[in-house]
Each structure stands twice: as structure tokens, then as C-alpha cells.
Image 1: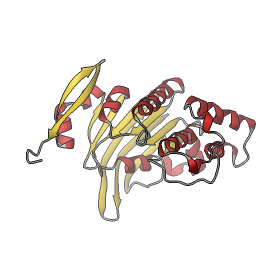
Image 2: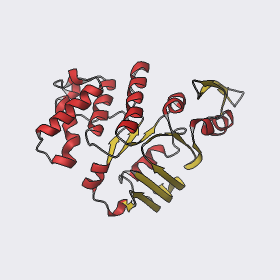
Image 3: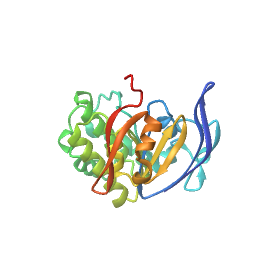
Image 4: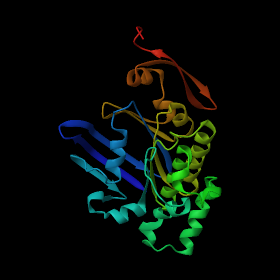
Length: 259
């Protein structure tokens, strides 16, 4: 489970989004991508999972250029959980999650597929929703179901776009603990986009901080989450304290004193 990104750029029409991104990520580990709105976090994820093609540079997965990997084979290696899915599925939860097994089994589910699905639903504490209609669930339940669908792909790399965005505090922590544990217990490379700096600091092995479509800082939470970096990237004054060995950000005010 190895991703190597070499000098990629990406533009929408003539609007540059990513510029000179170079990364070398190897699992198992839990990686979080941070940065303000519009800096290219989701675009970077989509360049990795072959939804978007960089305008320059290359993306390698396990030393193979993704241009040479078929989409079905990519789906066996890389699971993807979108941001706050607005998808509508006139299906039960179990049938919705079973869709994640299609790269392995096609559209004919096996007993093994069903066992994998039930185990993931139980792990996420949503097994009681198995026979409920997906379209009847709350936004937070939707997000957990979409996470389950990504996990049943049995990927080596799991990409998540703000997976805790619609969850309350308890369930944010619960899901992030699960993802952290999965990285270790299942030897996964987990890459998560987040806007929650403190959750990123608490759980991440590595943090990638983006600004203006480039990597501003990369390293451990202690290396990346600093008062100087928060001010330069977000334009916010802060105090940072140590909580159980992790930096914890206490926000003060925007740097613009007129606000």
C-alpha cells in the first residue's frame, strides 16, 4: 500500500487548483489532509483515485502508474467515501452496502459478501439498520452507511472526504477511532480530508497541510500544528496546548483586527 505522487498539477479549464504536489505515503498509517476551503483537498483525493487526471505529473500506486490500472482493479485497491453523500438509493442499507462488493463479486452476491457486510455494519454499530431503507435514514446514518460501503471493498487504501461531517461529537470520535484502528489492524493506508484540526491532531500519524493548492507543511501533528502555521494558513490567532501528547488548538480570533 504505497502512493507516490510526483510533481502533479491540476487545473479546471484555466483555473489552477493544484501546483507541484509531491508526496510519498506508505501504510499502514492514518493521514489527514487539512487546509481552508478551496485549496484543492478533494481535488487531490480525486487525482489519487483516478476520478480526475492531473494536467502534469504522475500518481503511482504500489509502483504502478494509475493510468495503467483499470477502474475495476483500482476499486479493489482503493476505497472511497465521498463527502456527505446526496446519493439516493431505493434500497435497504444492506443492499446499498453490498454495492461496495461489486469489484470483487460483480453483481451476484455470495455468502462471503454478506458475512463481510454484516461484520462491517456491526463494527460501525449500524447492524440494526440493515433492513431499513437507505432513503429514510438521517444524514449521519447516511454517512456511516457510505463508510461501510467503502470498507466492504476490502481496500488497501481508504480515501475519505470529511467522513465525520454530519456526525455529532460522540460519533465523530467513534468513527475516527475505528478508522485509526483499521489502519493498524488491517494494514490500511487511510487518507482523510478534515476541517477539524483537533481531531486530525489527536488521531493522525501524519498531517498534510495545504495552502493555495500546494503543500504548506507535512509531518507529525507536533510538526504541523503550530501557532505560526495556523496563522499563516488560516489567518487565525491561536494558542496551542499539549493534551495527552498531542497539540490542541484553542482558537482566539481572526488576524484581521477589524473582524
